[in-house]
Image (cartoon, rainbow, N blue to C red; front, side, top):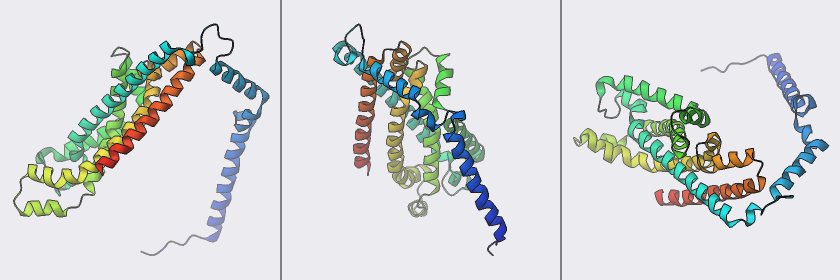
Length: 281
């Protein structure tokens, strides 16, 4: 294929246009008219920051600071356990449904390169599953949680389902791409030996896919744990719901306790996830 040569003046115009757009965009960011970065340097912003820091420190409180309140620490730990339950439930639901459908979301099934258990409708099934992957991973968890709150009572269940729906699409898409990039040698060897579809699936496909699938699962569990606080803001339970309540009541000393629990929880889940990945590999 011959290389396309562009006239020099077109290249020069493109470079100049890029520079102009960069200057304009950064000018708008730094401009006071757009609430830009320079707002941080204003005395009003510094005063607001100092006021917020004082509120977190609990100055002028008419009660004991939450940091020294054992009863509230117990409540915060309970909400942390709720958050863990939500994340485990969410990744469990997403993982099970992704495992059930990702194989038929791969192009190998449509092209007949891999055995199909429903050859008549494999193209329709492929389109339906791929569409599900696109819709679910493209819909924000917060929006799904807001809709589910109207159907289910507030708690960890709507939050877990919302997180599971979104992550189902991500896990399904990634797992389908794993199948599309499989090493065909074991599968061809099993076919040559007369293995049936189930044998090919369990001895040729799953051994290649499952380790990476479980790795994806642990990574998404980390992300879900960090996102629980977001869906919790719409009364979906866990630390997020308590965080929203305490913020709305301006109880910033308790917000500080919740932030400590949340950061500790994220670090703990990351460490567990790392150990799980070591066991997988």
